[in-house]
Length: 349
Image (tube, rainbow, N blue to C red):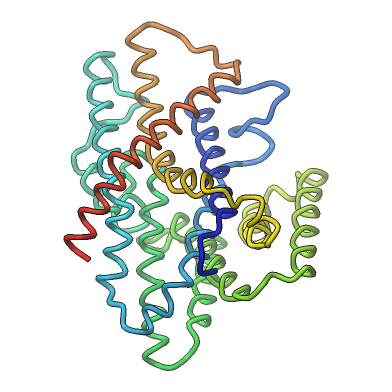
């Protein structure tokens, strides 16, 4: 687990593409007869965000020893902030400008969304969702980043506290999973303890505990067990959807995501996805995720101003949009994320 696993990069790429498809269909109302629909289909593909949380927690294991050896909260958390928030800030400002242009040129609010300077500010600070403020829906997919930052805070202090008091951090991380499950089960809705943070707590700390459990080589028996569980879960959902619908969140969070992560950590998958392209693609998939929201607004602004229409029944339009999002994400990664990260890292870390 010391070297980068490109199999996990592959999972990030696929999950990001699915989320882009999901939001494209959600925003445009597109529905494809006889094809897989990523919104209003047989499965709620928005659960792919749980996979993002799970992978983020899984990749935190290497920081545990650093925290125990004296890594400060500033060193840890500032590293996460300068990696995540600069792109979020730029994309949020661009989307807000697009909303203003839409309002002025089209003569109406875009989907009833009123431009908000306060909303932009709390989004830039990574406070979009889960905390003390109502979600202003500025580049709404970035709610995930806000919750992820809360998870990072909790991760650091649970490791630090357990190290100071001399007990296993696993106890606190397991408690966070139960807390998330309780919040979701009982529909608790308080600042820092609500449906959004519950999604992060459950999946993030499941990924972290999973990483602890498979530090060594993944056995053949475990690989086969995960494969069987995946197939049984798919079969159960396919045949008994009427019953599985209410359970799918738990199945996806505690079975599907962990099993996929384990299988991608096998030697076979590491060999299949050993090419450097998966690392590059995995890295700029974050930018694709951040920019696909503003890109949807920009697309609809263009269509409104040009009086053109998009044939929503053509699935090729969704793939074309995804291609634009991938290109934009790559450009953002090269000219925005990497340079800003280097500058901020040299200055503050």
